[in-house]
Image (cartoon, rainbow, N blue to C red; front, side):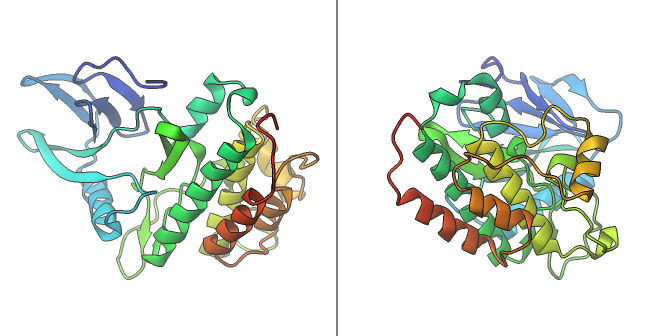
Length: 269
């Protein structure tokens, strides 16, 4: 189980700014700010995130079930007044972890393109439900057998018509430059599709965009319209169109990727 902690209840799989993800059983994990096992608190954050967990549960409930969306089994009380979300266990960890732990030759190009189709298809579904993810990244894409991908981590997501307060934005390596607009005036769909292009690059090139650079340098380069080289990169036109705001929907991206998949790539490319 690459990227997953030992199979003991309460074992920490990952840590975010306000929550742990810990092993619960063979099928699920718990996401919360305190870890309790057999009535004892094992780990905790100083600040609670009950509101954030409630918000994320609302988003998952609004989404319902979809093959490319991580399953949520609801919010449950792990100790008096303390709640966690019970989520589907991703046995292969997240996409970014997997890329770091496996050589490029380990995964055929057709498989990588299918991963990108999964991501774009999941995002298309998210948008069809009038939801903006707000934090698309390969660290929030979860891997399952045969390297199928599901999108997770909806803690900062926005639902049209709900009065959620914006509280996250994309990481610097995935963030749409302003291009003469004010930061908050960038179209949400273009933000998401730019980030999608970065995710496609990370999967196809098998490395994070400008992963060797600090956040400030990445932001400066993006502001100068300097992006990672696409020379020799499969689906480069799809990535370029995402970065240059040429697409209007994730469905268009998915269709373009499926067209790429229809071409004959050898298992060694």
